[in-house]
Length: 74
Image (cartoon, rainbow, N blue to C red):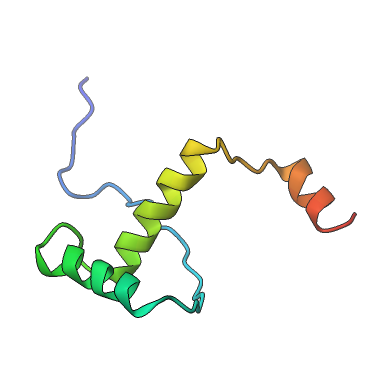
């Protein structure tokens, strides 16, 4: 018996987001807005997320569970 596939019924893996406020020079905001205005990203948050992912990848930043405990001083 074949398994029946259902289209569009896969659960999407949702990311949990937190709000972070940062101070940026006005020209950085202009750059963020320009990337959104030309349609490369949907919003400023997507631009910042992509930039951070690239930065973390460049410096090979990964935090494992045991590293979190060390960072928290446990």
